[in-house]
Image (cartoon, rainbow, N blue to C red):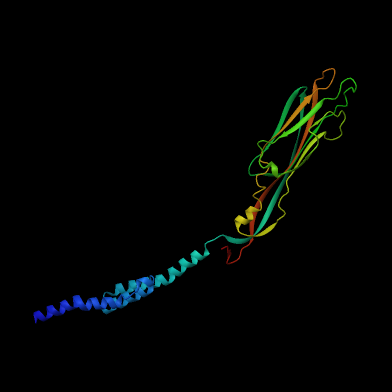
Length: 261
């Protein structure tokens, strides 16, 4: 009967649908989001009410994707962190030098300068000043005072050097070798190999990298002490130095690098 069919349709659209929906989606949200359980419930719902096959396939794809993608996400999160390797430090050394001759008039100051630029680092510098006053007539013309000063105001990290020198000023008439000299020496880290993160490896060199970079200025002054004024002094300057460059190489990399916590 038409009336009976209407009652049956109304019952399906109302009470029976609500009851089946409640049973299929009986998920306790308070206990956390369970993706796979919800997908299974959805699949039961689709089969019971004969929804299209493509919808069932879609749910299957979701379940399969969840079982693959979610573990990958957690594995990626666990792998985040600095990796530890076995490092080798290669130190390249370059030795150089130069000589300068300058005539300094009495009562004046002359400058000689040389510079080191990035990315070089300087582990050793020697500056020596040689002059001969054997032509001075002792007793008539006293030997001139020669002063040699190293100005390092624009040089980086000079406090890292161990330094030694003679007196910066002398009036010796006859000097064999350098009458005035300065010696700057940087002690490099003795470490050759290291196991740890890249940041930890770099920390062994951070205090010495860039040392000596800048303009080194040699100031030479001559003050006459003679009774009869002479012209000045010829001063020979010798400069010896050593530069170094450090490169870090991974010499052993594990299949599964350690992860620092």
